[in-house]
Length: 335
Ligand code: HEM
Ligand code: MG
Image 1 (spheres, rainbow, N blue to C red):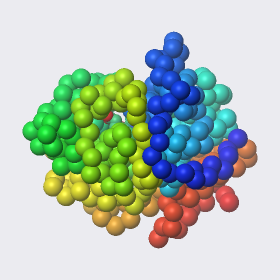
Image 2 (cartoon, protein in one colour; image 1 turned 60 degrees about the vertical axis):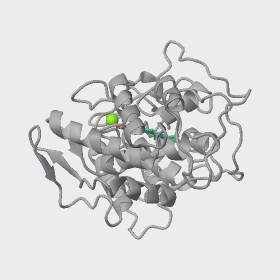
Image 3 (cartoon, helix red, strand yellow; image 1 turned 30 degrees about the vertical axis):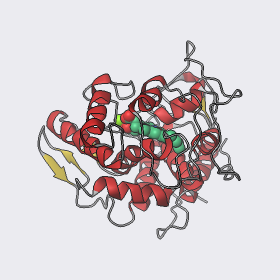
């Protein structure tokens, strides 16, 4: 069943993480990979189970160990996904496609579909993966990577990716979805994760990154993570953890040059803003917590006592990732 969140790691200094204990192994038959290059890489190096079927606690410890992601951000993102994509009774989740390896399913409308599940946590306008309506929402797409590379060449720092050039690609991905995807949906939580995923390569994929993001990302290193799911040789995790507050500041830098508000397409080319969605203005993380809590209620309308208790624990774990929020905790499955 559900477990408490593992604690923060103690030592957050930079260190070699592509070490002898964590060799790269290409996927074996049956191993699952998905839309997240960070988690795929951790699986390919054994920081989480190489099968790609993992517990939320494993993910939270591994993203701290391997990348120095802050405990609050790790907990918030992991449980934001787990409550809608994972199996509450077995405490297992697929980092990609739906699989029987996560154990017996709860009855529909529960999905328990893993991170590939479109519209639960995964969403549109991804960095190097297609929109669900237009192609694969989890496989690496060379055309999109070439567009990311072109943004770095045209607007980055000496042919490397930096925040301003990553912001250009973020905006281009949104414009592309508006232009081509009749189902384009860009509301919280996906709205927030879209901006966050744009900052992650600069925060986490740069070897020995310093306290801020003063270093930039080479395109070969970017490809190693996005496509091969492999740490580059001699990869050191960033120095110092990087959590909700730090990523929040970077997200603002990505948003400000091209401020698109949350919304969705009503027909190709017709993007309509959702005035209810706070996006990045106000406490968007609280809104994301409420949205995911409500979606969980919709997926589990009539839970058994055992399921009810597990979901209650996992929603409490999710809330704990908010740190010291201004929003109230909700208890739709009891306390
Ligand atoms: C994308 C899950 C941590 C880097 C995604 C996506 C999911 C996901 C579901 C797909 C979203 C979309 O594009 O539609 C998670 C979970 C994490 C986590 C549950 C647990 C903490 C990380 C970490 C990194 C990372 C630590 C970096 C080291 C990225 C990047 C993308 C992404 C760069 C964009 C992928 C692309 O479209 O090219 N993540 N992630 N994630 N994630 Fe993660
Ligand atoms: Mg996506």
